[in-house]
Length: 119
Image (cartoon, rainbow, N blue to C red; front, side, top):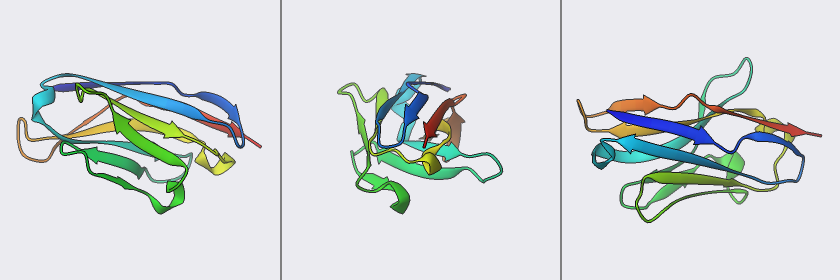
């Protein structure tokens, strides 16, 4: 099992920055990749950014050039640096881990952290 805890959300003005953190615990050696998703009211959850165990990253087009995903040396904490925030970035941000345990493609989710960007 993998447990994920997000932190770092809050209220920020447009143009500001926030850094989210996702701390993974448990069977972290089973994780293939960790991603950040977001869900705004009335909308579907969408992928924002992800980082694989090998370090490759991918981003949604809407955040390229503004958001950066990274991780610490232990690979158990993943960060999402969000710059030049816009009101449309307002959402609950969730951390997700793709794991091969107990089965390939097992997904784990954190509880989410609210990000609100005021205009």
